[in-house]
Image 1 (cartoon, rainbow, N blue to C red):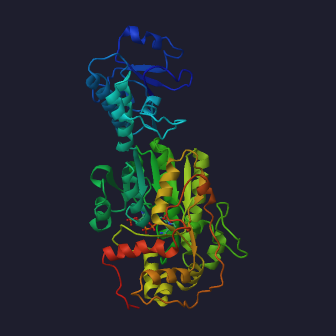
Image 2 (tube, protein in one colour):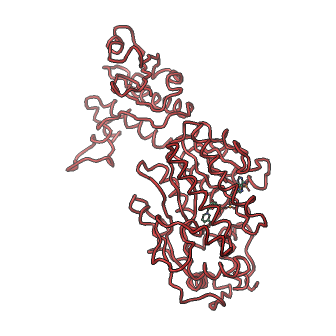
Length: 503
Ligand SMILES: NC(=O)c1ccc[n+]([C@@H]2O[C@H](COP(=O)([O-])OP(=O)(O)OC[C@H]3O[C@@H](n4cnc5c(N)ncnc54)[C@H](OP(=O)(O)O)[C@@H]3O)[C@@H](O)[C@H]2O)c1
């Protein structure tokens, strides 16, 4: 913990690195404080000297930035505005360099909120900003202070640098979209892939905006114990997205179940070893919730768990995936309880929308299959699961899913499992909506083998919505065709569209 300024954590038991540029006269009262002989240390640093806070911040879990030039001055720009604005940025850079700082607390002032011309409001809240041009024009008492505080906050918000996070399975459909969104938000990203040298599989990541400065690739494999340790070192968050997805494998135990279960535990061990990770976000699936014998409920929520014995007995399409993800998520919760790691898990249904990967994600294959005919749909999904899914589908847009990942990482009160599902649909609705949008395709309206009488069983996102998350692609404004059309647009851009009339 580092405090720039005077003691405020007197009896908190925290070790404090205080920074003072002054002399014995100015620090004596600090050295005389309770616990001062064992807990504090003083560090020389000055807002006017770039890099001078680095040593004090190294190894700290938090930084309270209280220091500010407060004296009466002649040269406003050089003695007040520049040190304030450059100083806060220098300290924030030191925080990101240290990689240990969980939160930066900046003591601002209502002077960044309340100064402006009439008419004045009845009440101020955090949405108000002081009018800098007005301060310059009016030159009221301490006008320069108000400007520099304002500029500080604007730069902090625009700079948007938020620390380093790790994303596993970064090359995949959801992983790459999540990396793109994290870079947009100002995070540094350690992206794990199995083969960083495989240009074909990582080129789309390296071409993302901000990748040249904010992204690094790390080699890691769910089958190799300890291989995620280096990528996770120094990260404040880990998004575990990677998962073996080969549901046609002949060796379910070794190819899907073991790497999924052992992998999540290995990554969680890496998080506790790193000591910097404040939350572990695991991309689970509604497949850990909805698979079980009849009678089925009217609605699913996070209290439901897939019945692993039923999956073993039935061996339905993707049975090993349901077993792997359900067992892995349960193991993750056990680990979290035992080791006290902060964990959030997210359960999406079918994830649809545009993609940055070079190859087609499964949901894009489904959408293309609807454009070209039912036999193709059933071939790509497998008879039984395909019919069931297409009569009782649930979906979420990839952009909403990735936003929800970041929302749940950043929200201080996020806790437990969160279903992230915005739509229920069946194949008829999807086909109707797509036929209106893409009339050049002869889209079928009859679907052999699909039981139209099946009632949808929603997976409720109530818990996520109650936490304040809002779906951008919500079911009030967007139908299932709107959600899926992003995939078609991506296919067009990448030259992956079948020609109209293809079956
Ligand atoms: N797509 C959906 O509709 C959907 C729905 C619900 C839940 N999910 C969950 O979302 C996550 C991502 O799915 P996705 O659709 O993005 O799948 P995807 O495109 O197939 O990506 C899967 C990723 O996992 C990585 N991976 C596979 N085996 C690995 C191993 N042994 N070691 C390390 N990495 C490995 C792959 O990395 P390489 O590049 O190294 O091959 C790939 O980047 C999964 O956890 C899945 O369960 C997806």
